[in-house]
Length: 456
Image (cartoon, rainbow, N blue to C red; front, side):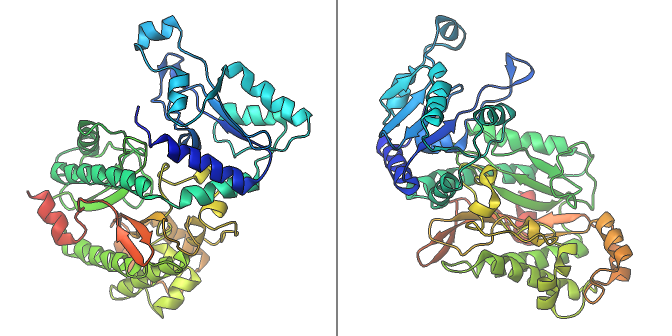
Protein backbone atom coordinates (compact mmCIF):
# COMPACT_ATOMS: atom_id res chain seq x y z
CA UNK A 1 0.00 0.00 0.00
CA UNK A 2 1.34 3.43 -0.93
CA UNK A 3 0.23 6.64 0.74
CA UNK A 4 1.31 10.21 1.20
CA UNK A 5 2.87 11.03 4.58
CA UNK A 6 0.33 10.76 7.40
CA UNK A 7 0.75 14.48 8.11
CA UNK A 8 -0.86 15.18 4.72
CA UNK A 9 -4.09 13.44 5.73
CA UNK A 10 -4.09 14.96 9.22
CA UNK A 11 -3.70 18.43 7.71
CA UNK A 12 -6.48 17.80 5.18
CA UNK A 13 -8.94 16.70 7.86
CA UNK A 14 -8.05 19.66 10.08
CA UNK A 15 -8.66 22.06 7.19
CA UNK A 16 -11.97 20.37 6.39
CA UNK A 17 -13.12 20.73 10.02
CA UNK A 18 -12.28 24.42 9.92
CA UNK A 19 -14.18 24.97 6.67
CA UNK A 20 -17.37 23.15 7.70
CA UNK A 21 -17.25 24.36 11.30
CA UNK A 22 -19.51 21.96 13.18
CA UNK A 23 -21.42 18.71 12.96
CA UNK A 24 -20.65 15.15 11.91
CA UNK A 25 -18.98 14.53 8.53
CA UNK A 26 -19.87 11.14 7.04
CA UNK A 27 -17.65 9.19 4.60
CA UNK A 28 -19.07 5.94 3.18
CA UNK A 29 -16.40 3.75 1.65
CA UNK A 30 -17.02 1.40 -1.25
CA UNK A 31 -17.71 -2.33 -1.02
CA UNK A 32 -16.66 -5.14 -3.32
CA UNK A 33 -19.24 -5.55 -6.11
CA UNK A 34 -19.92 -8.86 -7.86
CA UNK A 35 -20.17 -8.98 -11.66
CA UNK A 36 -22.26 -12.13 -12.02
CA UNK A 37 -21.94 -13.62 -8.54
CA UNK A 38 -20.50 -12.34 -5.27
CA UNK A 39 -17.01 -13.81 -5.41
CA UNK A 40 -16.43 -12.87 -9.06
CA UNK A 41 -16.08 -9.17 -8.51
CA UNK A 42 -15.32 -6.06 -10.45
CA UNK A 43 -11.88 -4.56 -9.76
CA UNK A 44 -12.19 -2.71 -6.46
CA UNK A 45 -11.87 1.08 -6.47
CA UNK A 46 -12.21 3.09 -3.29
CA UNK A 47 -14.28 6.27 -3.12
CA UNK A 48 -11.97 9.14 -4.04
CA UNK A 49 -12.98 11.44 -1.18
CA UNK A 50 -12.31 8.62 1.29
CA UNK A 51 -8.87 8.23 -0.30
CA UNK A 52 -8.26 11.98 -0.08
CA UNK A 53 -8.93 12.29 3.65
CA UNK A 54 -8.27 8.77 5.01
CA UNK A 55 -6.04 6.97 2.45
CA UNK A 56 -7.97 3.75 3.18
CA UNK A 57 -7.68 1.76 -0.03
CA UNK A 58 -9.64 -1.32 0.97
CA UNK A 59 -13.26 -2.45 0.83
CA UNK A 60 -15.82 -2.33 3.62
CA UNK A 61 -14.68 0.70 5.61
CA UNK A 62 -16.49 3.90 6.55
CA UNK A 63 -15.29 6.94 8.44
CA UNK A 64 -16.54 9.91 10.45
CA UNK A 65 -15.13 13.27 11.40
CA UNK A 66 -17.00 14.37 14.51
CA UNK A 67 -16.13 18.04 14.56
CA UNK A 68 -18.12 18.79 17.71
CA UNK A 69 -16.34 16.09 19.74
CA UNK A 70 -12.95 16.35 17.94
CA UNK A 71 -12.88 12.73 16.77
CA UNK A 72 -11.63 11.12 13.56
CA UNK A 73 -12.89 7.54 13.42
CA UNK A 74 -12.48 4.69 10.94
CA UNK A 75 -14.96 1.80 11.08
CA UNK A 76 -13.57 -1.42 9.59
CA UNK A 77 -13.46 -5.12 10.44
CA UNK A 78 -10.13 -6.83 10.95
CA UNK A 79 -9.04 -9.80 8.85
CA UNK A 80 -10.36 -13.24 9.70
CA UNK A 81 -8.38 -16.43 9.23
CA UNK A 82 -10.48 -17.12 6.11
CA UNK A 83 -9.37 -13.77 4.66
CA UNK A 84 -5.74 -14.66 5.32
CA UNK A 85 -6.08 -18.15 3.83
CA UNK A 86 -7.49 -16.80 0.58
CA UNK A 87 -5.73 -13.42 0.31
CA UNK A 88 -2.55 -13.80 2.36
CA UNK A 89 -1.28 -11.87 5.35
CA UNK A 90 -1.89 -8.13 5.16
CA UNK A 91 -1.52 -5.15 7.50
CA UNK A 92 -4.26 -4.81 10.08
CA UNK A 93 -6.89 -2.10 9.68
CA UNK A 94 -5.45 -0.38 12.73
CA UNK A 95 -1.99 -0.37 11.15
CA UNK A 96 -3.36 0.96 7.88
CA UNK A 97 -5.40 3.65 9.64
CA UNK A 98 -2.32 4.78 11.52
CA UNK A 99 -0.69 5.58 8.17
CA UNK A 100 -3.35 8.29 7.75
CA UNK A 101 -2.95 9.50 11.33
CA UNK A 102 -6.15 7.89 12.66
CA UNK A 103 -5.87 6.05 15.98
CA UNK A 104 -9.58 5.52 16.68
CA UNK A 105 -10.57 2.34 14.78
CA UNK A 106 -13.87 0.60 15.56
CA UNK A 107 -15.83 -2.37 14.16
CA UNK A 108 -17.84 -1.65 11.02
CA UNK A 109 -21.12 -2.52 12.78
CA UNK A 110 -20.77 0.55 15.01
CA UNK A 111 -20.88 3.02 12.10
CA UNK A 112 -24.63 3.32 11.49
CA UNK A 113 -25.51 3.43 15.23
CA UNK A 114 -23.03 6.31 15.71
CA UNK A 115 -24.72 8.31 12.95
CA UNK A 116 -28.29 7.53 14.05
CA UNK A 117 -27.43 8.50 17.64
CA UNK A 118 -26.06 11.81 16.38
CA UNK A 119 -29.28 12.44 14.44
CA UNK A 120 -31.39 11.54 17.47
CA UNK A 121 -29.39 13.96 19.61
CA UNK A 122 -29.91 16.78 17.13
CA UNK A 123 -26.34 16.91 15.83
CA UNK A 124 -26.00 18.19 12.27
CA UNK A 125 -25.01 15.29 10.00
CA UNK A 126 -23.22 16.25 6.77
CA UNK A 127 -23.19 13.79 3.87
CA UNK A 128 -22.01 13.86 0.25
CA UNK A 129 -24.10 12.82 -2.80
CA UNK A 130 -24.20 9.05 -3.31
CA UNK A 131 -23.40 7.40 -6.62
CA UNK A 132 -23.92 3.76 -5.64
CA UNK A 133 -27.35 2.29 -4.94
CA UNK A 134 -26.36 0.80 -1.58
CA UNK A 135 -25.13 4.20 -0.38
CA UNK A 136 -28.32 5.89 -1.57
CA UNK A 137 -30.26 3.36 0.47
CA UNK A 138 -28.27 4.15 3.61
CA UNK A 139 -28.80 7.90 3.22
CA UNK A 140 -32.50 7.34 2.53
CA UNK A 141 -32.89 5.33 5.74
CA UNK A 142 -31.25 8.14 7.67
CA UNK A 143 -33.46 10.73 5.99
CA UNK A 144 -30.55 13.10 5.31
CA UNK A 145 -29.85 15.21 2.24
CA UNK A 146 -26.36 16.02 0.89
CA UNK A 147 -24.81 19.01 2.65
CA UNK A 148 -23.88 21.92 0.39
CA UNK A 149 -21.40 23.20 3.01
CA UNK A 150 -19.67 19.81 3.00
CA UNK A 151 -19.72 19.57 -0.81
CA UNK A 152 -18.27 23.05 -1.30
CA UNK A 153 -15.51 22.47 1.26
CA UNK A 154 -14.44 19.16 -0.29
CA UNK A 155 -14.66 20.55 -3.83
CA UNK A 156 -12.52 23.57 -3.04
CA UNK A 157 -9.87 21.53 -1.26
CA UNK A 158 -9.65 18.82 -3.92
CA UNK A 159 -9.72 21.38 -6.76
CA UNK A 160 -6.47 22.95 -5.52
CA UNK A 161 -3.79 20.35 -6.16
CA UNK A 162 -0.67 20.34 -3.99
CA UNK A 163 2.80 19.66 -5.46
CA UNK A 164 2.69 16.04 -4.25
CA UNK A 165 -0.67 15.56 -5.99
CA UNK A 166 0.65 17.13 -9.20
CA UNK A 167 3.57 14.70 -9.08
CA UNK A 168 1.11 11.80 -8.94
CA UNK A 169 -0.98 13.21 -11.79
CA UNK A 170 2.15 13.53 -13.91
CA UNK A 171 2.88 9.85 -13.31
CA UNK A 172 -0.60 9.09 -14.62
CA UNK A 173 -0.09 11.38 -17.61
CA UNK A 174 3.27 9.83 -18.52
CA UNK A 175 1.75 6.37 -18.39
CA UNK A 176 -1.07 7.64 -20.57
CA UNK A 177 1.44 8.90 -23.17
CA UNK A 178 2.92 5.38 -23.34
CA UNK A 179 -0.57 4.02 -23.95
CA UNK A 180 -1.23 6.44 -26.82
CA UNK A 181 2.15 5.78 -28.44
CA UNK A 182 1.33 2.06 -28.29
CA UNK A 183 -1.97 2.79 -30.04
CA UNK A 184 -0.25 4.74 -32.82
CA UNK A 185 2.21 1.92 -33.45
CA UNK A 186 -0.55 -0.71 -33.46
CA UNK A 187 -3.04 1.15 -35.66
CA UNK A 188 -3.00 -0.07 -39.27
CA UNK A 189 -5.37 -1.35 -41.97
CA UNK A 190 -6.66 -4.89 -41.52
CA UNK A 191 -6.57 -4.83 -37.74
CA UNK A 192 -9.60 -4.51 -35.48
CA UNK A 193 -10.16 -1.70 -33.01
CA UNK A 194 -10.04 -4.22 -30.15
CA UNK A 195 -6.48 -5.22 -31.14
CA UNK A 196 -5.36 -1.62 -30.67
CA UNK A 197 -7.26 -1.42 -27.39
CA UNK A 198 -5.41 -4.56 -26.26
CA UNK A 199 -2.07 -2.87 -26.95
CA UNK A 200 -3.23 0.16 -24.94
CA UNK A 201 -4.12 -2.06 -21.98
CA UNK A 202 -0.83 -3.92 -22.33
CA UNK A 203 1.13 -0.67 -22.15
CA UNK A 204 -0.74 0.26 -18.97
CA UNK A 205 -0.44 -3.11 -17.28
CA UNK A 206 3.22 -3.51 -18.25
CA UNK A 207 3.82 -0.33 -16.27
CA UNK A 208 1.83 -1.68 -13.32
CA UNK A 209 -1.04 0.77 -13.55
CA UNK A 210 -4.80 0.60 -13.87
CA UNK A 211 -7.01 2.42 -16.36
CA UNK A 212 -8.50 5.69 -15.14
CA UNK A 213 -11.60 5.09 -17.31
CA UNK A 214 -12.81 2.63 -20.00
CA UNK A 215 -10.89 2.93 -23.27
CA UNK A 216 -12.44 4.70 -26.25
CA UNK A 217 -10.85 3.30 -29.42
CA UNK A 218 -12.99 3.79 -32.49
CA UNK A 219 -13.06 4.66 -36.17
CA UNK A 220 -16.44 6.28 -35.44
CA UNK A 221 -15.00 9.28 -33.68
CA UNK A 222 -18.16 11.29 -34.28
CA UNK A 223 -19.74 9.32 -31.41
CA UNK A 224 -18.18 11.11 -28.46
CA UNK A 225 -18.06 8.19 -26.00
CA UNK A 226 -18.06 5.19 -28.32
CA UNK A 227 -16.99 2.06 -26.41
CA UNK A 228 -17.58 -0.45 -29.22
CA UNK A 229 -14.32 -1.94 -30.50
CA UNK A 230 -15.54 -4.41 -33.13
CA UNK A 231 -14.69 -2.69 -36.44
CA UNK A 232 -12.06 -3.80 -38.89
CA UNK A 233 -9.95 -0.73 -39.65
CA UNK A 234 -9.46 0.31 -43.26
CA UNK A 235 -7.13 2.57 -45.24
CA UNK A 236 -8.50 6.11 -45.34
CA UNK A 237 -10.16 5.95 -41.91
CA UNK A 238 -9.05 7.67 -38.73
CA UNK A 239 -8.91 6.11 -35.27
CA UNK A 240 -9.84 8.17 -32.22
CA UNK A 241 -8.32 7.00 -28.92
CA UNK A 242 -9.27 8.40 -25.51
CA UNK A 243 -7.45 6.58 -22.72
CA UNK A 244 -5.68 7.27 -19.45
CA UNK A 245 -3.79 5.51 -16.70
CA UNK A 246 -3.79 5.91 -12.93
CA UNK A 247 -0.79 6.58 -10.72
CA UNK A 248 -0.07 4.30 -7.72
CA UNK A 249 -2.15 6.65 -5.55
CA UNK A 250 -5.04 6.62 -8.05
CA UNK A 251 -4.51 10.03 -9.65
CA UNK A 252 -5.71 10.07 -13.25
CA UNK A 253 -4.16 10.86 -16.58
CA UNK A 254 -6.52 11.66 -19.46
CA UNK A 255 -5.37 12.01 -23.07
CA UNK A 256 -7.00 11.77 -26.50
CA UNK A 257 -5.38 11.24 -29.89
CA UNK A 258 -6.63 10.94 -33.45
CA UNK A 259 -4.51 9.10 -36.00
CA UNK A 260 -4.81 7.85 -39.56
CA UNK A 261 -5.36 4.12 -39.88
CA UNK A 262 -2.88 4.09 -42.76
CA UNK A 263 0.51 5.74 -42.79
CA UNK A 264 -0.78 9.23 -43.57
CA UNK A 265 -3.80 11.48 -43.17
CA UNK A 266 -5.74 12.26 -46.33
CA UNK A 267 -5.60 15.88 -47.48
CA UNK A 268 -9.09 16.53 -46.12
CA UNK A 269 -8.31 14.88 -42.79
CA UNK A 270 -5.09 16.85 -42.39
CA UNK A 271 -6.90 20.13 -43.10
CA UNK A 272 -9.43 19.50 -40.34
CA UNK A 273 -6.72 18.18 -38.03
CA UNK A 274 -4.77 21.42 -38.50
CA UNK A 275 -7.87 23.48 -37.68
CA UNK A 276 -8.29 21.49 -34.49
CA UNK A 277 -4.64 21.91 -33.54
CA UNK A 278 -5.00 25.66 -34.03
CA UNK A 279 -7.99 25.68 -31.67
CA UNK A 280 -6.01 23.70 -29.12
CA UNK A 281 -3.10 26.11 -29.24
CA UNK A 282 -5.41 29.15 -29.07
CA UNK A 283 -7.00 27.74 -25.92
CA UNK A 284 -3.67 26.92 -24.29
CA UNK A 285 -2.43 30.43 -25.05
CA UNK A 286 -5.20 31.90 -22.87
CA UNK A 287 -4.56 29.80 -19.76
CA UNK A 288 -3.67 31.89 -16.71
CA UNK A 289 -5.00 32.65 -13.23
CA UNK A 290 -8.14 34.80 -13.29
CA UNK A 291 -9.19 33.78 -16.82
CA UNK A 292 -12.69 32.31 -16.96
CA UNK A 293 -12.60 28.90 -18.61
CA UNK A 294 -15.83 29.62 -20.48
CA UNK A 295 -13.91 32.30 -22.36
CA UNK A 296 -11.21 29.76 -23.20
CA UNK A 297 -13.89 27.41 -24.50
CA UNK A 298 -15.33 30.23 -26.62
CA UNK A 299 -11.88 30.97 -28.05
CA UNK A 300 -11.56 27.35 -29.17
CA UNK A 301 -15.09 27.44 -30.62
CA UNK A 302 -14.33 30.69 -32.47
CA UNK A 303 -11.10 29.25 -33.91
CA UNK A 304 -12.90 26.12 -35.10
CA UNK A 305 -15.68 28.24 -36.62
CA UNK A 306 -13.18 30.40 -38.48
CA UNK A 307 -11.36 27.35 -39.80
CA UNK A 308 -14.56 25.69 -40.99
CA UNK A 309 -15.53 28.88 -42.80
CA UNK A 310 -12.49 28.28 -44.98
CA UNK A 311 -13.95 24.89 -45.92
CA UNK A 312 -17.34 26.37 -46.76
CA UNK A 313 -19.02 24.64 -43.82
CA UNK A 314 -19.73 27.80 -41.85
CA UNK A 315 -20.24 31.48 -42.62
CA UNK A 316 -20.66 34.81 -40.89
CA UNK A 317 -18.68 36.21 -37.97
CA UNK A 318 -16.83 33.40 -36.17
CA UNK A 319 -17.13 35.04 -32.75
CA UNK A 320 -20.88 35.44 -33.21
CA UNK A 321 -21.10 31.80 -34.29
CA UNK A 322 -19.38 30.81 -31.05
CA UNK A 323 -21.52 33.04 -28.82
CA UNK A 324 -24.76 31.91 -30.49
CA UNK A 325 -24.01 28.22 -30.04
CA UNK A 326 -23.89 27.49 -33.78
CA UNK A 327 -20.36 26.11 -33.30
CA UNK A 328 -21.87 23.19 -31.35
CA UNK A 329 -22.90 21.53 -34.61
CA UNK A 330 -19.24 20.51 -34.90
CA UNK A 331 -18.07 20.88 -31.27
CA UNK A 332 -20.95 19.78 -29.01
CA UNK A 333 -18.81 18.84 -26.01
CA UNK A 334 -16.94 21.01 -23.53
CA UNK A 335 -13.32 22.07 -23.95
CA UNK A 336 -12.23 20.47 -20.69
CA UNK A 337 -12.95 19.29 -17.16
CA UNK A 338 -11.24 19.14 -13.78
CA UNK A 339 -9.19 16.03 -13.09
CA UNK A 340 -7.39 14.48 -10.14
CA UNK A 341 -8.40 11.39 -8.16
CA UNK A 342 -11.32 11.13 -10.60
CA UNK A 343 -10.80 11.54 -14.32
CA UNK A 344 -13.84 13.86 -14.23
CA UNK A 345 -12.83 15.11 -10.82
CA UNK A 346 -15.62 14.94 -8.23
CA UNK A 347 -18.33 14.67 -10.87
CA UNK A 348 -20.54 12.94 -8.28
CA UNK A 349 -20.45 16.08 -6.11
CA UNK A 350 -22.08 18.16 -8.86
CA UNK A 351 -20.48 20.12 -11.69
CA UNK A 352 -22.13 23.33 -10.49
CA UNK A 353 -20.00 23.10 -7.33
CA UNK A 354 -16.78 21.68 -8.75
CA UNK A 355 -16.57 23.38 -12.13
CA UNK A 356 -18.72 26.45 -11.55
CA UNK A 357 -18.06 27.39 -7.92
CA UNK A 358 -21.71 27.04 -6.97
CA UNK A 359 -23.13 28.91 -9.96
CA UNK A 360 -25.74 27.45 -12.32
CA UNK A 361 -24.61 25.87 -15.58
CA UNK A 362 -26.00 26.83 -18.95
CA UNK A 363 -28.69 24.56 -20.38
CA UNK A 364 -27.91 25.53 -23.99
CA UNK A 365 -26.76 22.73 -26.29
CA UNK A 366 -22.97 22.72 -26.39
CA UNK A 367 -22.50 24.97 -23.38
CA UNK A 368 -24.42 22.53 -21.15
CA UNK A 369 -21.65 19.97 -21.78
CA UNK A 370 -18.93 22.36 -20.55
CA UNK A 371 -17.95 20.89 -17.18
CA UNK A 372 -15.67 23.79 -16.23
CA UNK A 373 -16.84 27.40 -16.41
CA UNK A 374 -15.19 29.35 -13.58
CA UNK A 375 -12.19 31.61 -13.13
CA UNK A 376 -8.97 29.59 -13.15
CA UNK A 377 -6.88 29.48 -9.98
CA UNK A 378 -3.37 28.22 -9.20
CA UNK A 379 -3.52 24.51 -8.44
CA UNK A 380 -6.37 23.74 -10.83
CA UNK A 381 -5.69 20.71 -13.05
CA UNK A 382 -7.87 20.13 -16.09
CA UNK A 383 -7.99 18.91 -19.66
CA UNK A 384 -7.84 20.83 -22.92
CA UNK A 385 -9.64 18.69 -25.49
CA UNK A 386 -11.28 20.47 -28.42
CA UNK A 387 -12.90 18.29 -31.05
CA UNK A 388 -14.46 18.53 -34.48
CA UNK A 389 -17.25 16.05 -35.15
CA UNK A 390 -19.53 15.43 -38.13
CA UNK A 391 -22.66 13.81 -36.70
CA UNK A 392 -25.19 13.02 -39.45
CA UNK A 393 -28.16 12.76 -37.08
CA UNK A 394 -27.38 16.17 -35.60
CA UNK A 395 -27.01 17.67 -39.07
CA UNK A 396 -30.42 16.32 -40.08
CA UNK A 397 -32.13 17.49 -36.89
CA UNK A 398 -30.80 21.04 -36.97
CA UNK A 399 -31.51 21.41 -40.69
CA UNK A 400 -35.10 20.19 -40.21
CA UNK A 401 -35.50 22.76 -37.42
CA UNK A 402 -33.88 25.54 -39.45
CA UNK A 403 -31.33 26.27 -36.73
CA UNK A 404 -28.43 28.70 -37.16
CA UNK A 405 -28.84 29.15 -40.91
CA UNK A 406 -26.93 32.44 -40.57
CA UNK A 407 -23.82 30.44 -39.67
CA UNK A 408 -24.20 26.88 -41.01
CA UNK A 409 -23.94 25.85 -44.67
CA UNK A 410 -26.14 22.78 -44.77
CA UNK A 411 -25.67 22.10 -48.50
CA UNK A 412 -21.90 21.83 -48.06
CA UNK A 413 -22.23 19.84 -44.83
CA UNK A 414 -23.95 17.00 -46.69
CA UNK A 415 -20.63 16.29 -48.42
CA UNK A 416 -18.97 15.64 -45.05
CA UNK A 417 -21.45 13.22 -43.50
CA UNK A 418 -18.97 10.33 -43.54
CA UNK A 419 -15.95 12.25 -42.18
CA UNK A 420 -16.22 11.02 -38.57
CA UNK A 421 -14.68 12.96 -35.73
CA UNK A 422 -11.36 14.00 -34.23
CA UNK A 423 -10.23 15.00 -30.76
CA UNK A 424 -6.83 15.74 -29.24
CA UNK A 425 -6.29 16.22 -25.52
CA UNK A 426 -3.63 17.27 -23.04
CA UNK A 427 -3.66 17.98 -19.29
CA UNK A 428 -2.73 21.35 -17.77
CA UNK A 429 -1.94 22.90 -14.39
CA UNK A 430 -2.57 26.54 -13.55
CA UNK A 431 0.53 28.05 -11.94
CA UNK A 432 0.82 31.40 -10.11
CA UNK A 433 1.97 33.12 -13.32
CA UNK A 434 0.43 31.04 -16.11
CA UNK A 435 -0.01 27.37 -16.94
CA UNK A 436 2.07 24.34 -17.84
CA UNK A 437 1.40 21.10 -19.65
CA UNK A 438 1.56 18.11 -17.32
CA UNK A 439 3.72 15.09 -17.94
CA UNK A 440 7.37 14.72 -18.78
CA UNK A 441 6.69 12.57 -21.84
CA UNK A 442 5.32 14.39 -24.88
CA UNK A 443 2.35 13.00 -26.80
CA UNK A 444 2.39 13.67 -30.56
CA UNK A 445 -0.01 16.53 -31.29
CA UNK A 446 0.58 17.83 -34.83
CA UNK A 447 -0.32 15.82 -37.93
CA UNK A 448 3.37 15.39 -38.78
CA UNK A 449 4.18 14.18 -35.25
CA UNK A 450 1.34 11.66 -35.30
CA UNK A 451 2.41 10.26 -38.69
CA UNK A 452 6.01 10.01 -37.51
CA UNK A 453 4.97 8.15 -34.35
CA UNK A 454 2.92 5.69 -36.42
CA UNK A 455 5.75 4.96 -38.76
CA UNK A 456 8.54 4.36 -36.26
